[in-house]
Amino acid sequence: MSPQIMTVLGPVDSSLIGHTQPHEHLLCDLSSASLGVQPPREELSATARSRMQTPITLENRYEIRKTILHNENLQLTDEITIADELTDYRSAGGSAIVDATPIGLGRDPEGLARLSRRSGVHIVMGAGYYSKGFHTPFVAAAAEDEITRRIVEDIVIGADGTRVKSGVIGEIGLGWPTDPDELKVLRAASRAQMQTGTPLLIHPGGSANAPATAVTESMTVGVRPDRIVMAHLDARFFEERSFLDFAELGTYLELDLFGRESSHSSMAADPRWPNDARRLYYVRKLIEAGHIERILISQDTAQKSDLRRFGGPGYGHIIKNVVPLMVRLGFSYEEIECITIENPRRALSIP
Image 1 (cartoon, helix red, strand yellow):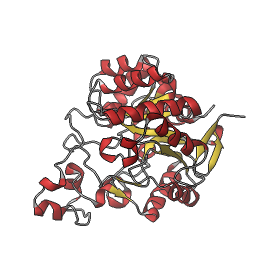
Image 2 (cartoon, helix red, strand yellow):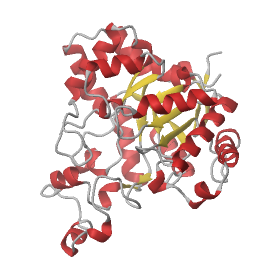
Image 3 (cartoon, helix red, strand yellow):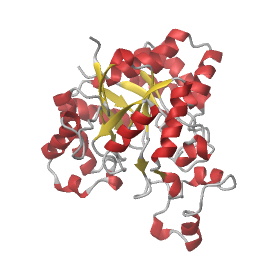
């Protein structure tokens, strides 16, 4: 029997899982706290606040994408819309998706189960907590072992009083510098990883030093690097050498912002954010250095303007656009299959 992957509908033999995007968001709400990329709401003018409430249209979509200042854009809460988007993903050849939405961002276990049944897509749910601005009061009050216990319960018993189990720990959100409560969560999540074998997905702080610092902390607790998925490397490293140096630590290497082509977005704190062709350049260099079996790619879909219904690329962007680009750039079928099918299977499998 092949290793198992825990989905919201139960364990699935990993050999049955095809194309997988290991870092997306299906049901989430990012509007409740500052993302650190826009002024606090209380500093906004009345006009700016009013614009945050207007419907997304062709006229304002680009501005919304650029500033992120829009409540509706930061809320993925309509199951019918998301189910339609997932159906399109499956029709394009998608098999599974990781919903990396942890507690505090509107995680919805039963909603994800309904989406999986409706679309036919295997969905893996996250556990744990995001960065400080999204922490629930529990995090500050709880001891580290209490947080570990909560994460383990989500994996072993079910999340939020349901029987829907998490299949990944994360994304565990860190700022830079890391807040003490974020560090407490990371250490608790690392202990939960060791107890359950479930992969640990880390959102590093906004510094080139942040990914290695987070890995070191988890390894100090005892986590093996091959059970860590380090997210957002294409938003932290902008030099080939940085990718290659970090790769030596032995974690999974996730470039997960495919489809984000603009350096003008307020999410792109550094204007060197790459486009998809540049991301694939880094992927090629990692392959040449012998790291192909630890490369993961995804889109981090988290806003309405990412969806096809609102003029975005949709969850199927990698299948429809990036894979053909990989072929044009000389990636072999075996390399593409390794990155989009075999690596996610291995990363998500629970011993």
